[in-house]
Image 1: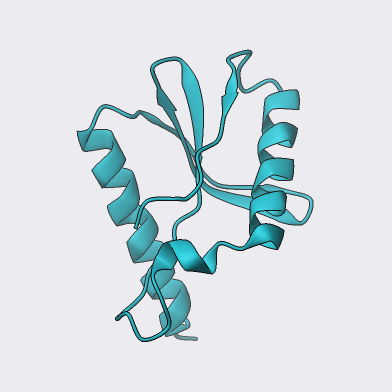
Image 2: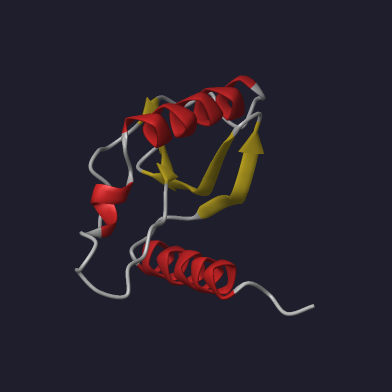
Length: 103
């Protein structure tokens, strides 16, 4: 059964985002972390702070920039999943979140 093209594009975008972050000195600690209803595409580390990354891609600007696709509901899901991951003992470092996400 062939992979849904949207899933394939998403996986490719996440791989590109991870490579981008690693080239800039962010070790990637986890990929596709799921907690309850939330998911975090990438968890990285920068200067002692955990970075929770939601990856979005667009083939053009017709439907807006990727950052515009991360609404309030998705931010809450990512924050809940991030708290769950921190509670699970990933690290005792401070939780840092940055909005908007980079495009």
